Length: 354
Length: 254
Image (cartoon, rainbow over all chains, first blue to last red; front, side, top):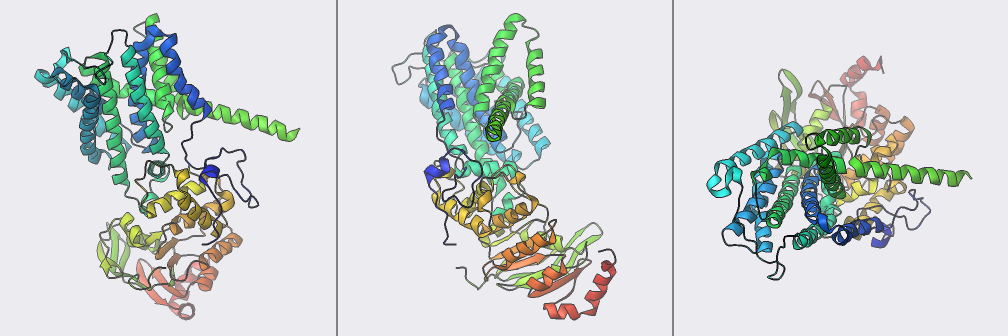
């Protein structure tokens, strides 16, 4: 075992200029998960920065897109990486929202700590629920998550003396961020707050999914039956990612509560869980960006189509969903990656022939 | 590297039945450290069931499994792997969408206890990558490091089966028809690879090709109908009339 092939982090992270490594080449370009920022990603993250200046009238809508995008990323962690389907993820979103909302309605208005507590409450609940979820098959998982979501919704409905019930939780007083930036009516501070939280968490999760831990999650998705034979306790691994996912969903919920200064029962509702699944599948699972792209397309389409005809906008979303699932497996991003790969292959093929 | 003591794998009266069907009954076997031990027998003899009982894939209906001095009968599969026993599968059970290198890196990372490292990327684990490439090179798979597992030729996938098992650094390696489904020329190559594995690794294998069995096994157990018919050296087994009868009955349609 002394004949080690020379490798280095830079070689490992290098792009795939030649897919085939020959035995001759002393430094094969090894394709392994890394998290170097690609130009397209940098452009992607500059878009919301540009939008802040270009579309001042849409700040509230774009803030909501970023929050739902973060929520969708939390689902992607368990669905796209761990392979766990869920129809009740709103439970964790709602817990985060109510935690942050109740804190600020009862005198704890500091937003960052409120958000962190929202994450902790959601994570603690997620950890407990995970034991019910990870051991089942897909159908059992769908039903357990659905059931938890329904129960939590009705519990919040019943506990109207705490949550405000169907009227929603009002009277929230959210402090200035760092004691300096006050949430304004135009939504400028809310926009920047949402963007910064989203970006920081995205950068952290991007590292996480490309780490050995992230690789083990993909391993469970790609070959769960093999995992025990390489020494992995699969259920334990899924419990960890489920808890992290719940925490991220809690942050998204807290962000929505703090930036809108209101929490309605709908944060726990089944439609929110179902929409989230649609958003993620539209955008593409297992690539983190899918949640963001899905949220943007879904909510922009909702905004535009419901302007045309408020009653029937879901018709078009339904049609889009069917087309995507049937013809672009891997969602919009999966489809684009495929097209891009084919274009490159065909142009490379022409180059070889000539 | 690994100590020779306490790695003896032993079963006591191991049985498994589903309803009235007895897949294994009262199987008591001992696999000494460094053994090259073949399990043979006609189809349906319960060989794969026995492997599953050893690894923890199935819980036995009765009987016990000992690894060294420890009773591991109730240990889950991943715990047995951590103690140094793993297996390969008769039907490829791989990480279809991962590259060959990613798959092996995954298995090595688990063995090294890096499973909860989340703040560094896989590409930064140069020790693990070096070990993975060395392992792939030893199996002549290094040229396929970047290939997606599902796109590999079947024979190469059989080698990945072995690579994943070796990445756990087993003391006992259970090979369930390692050459299943590949042409006989390639299966000889595959067994040459197996023959070159470290001498202190105990190897238990199921194989139908008697040429390969008698070439590579130093000890053979014959299972028939879920029971041990006999056990012995290749010479003893070759001379055993009962074994001949079992195989003559089959040879007409082989």
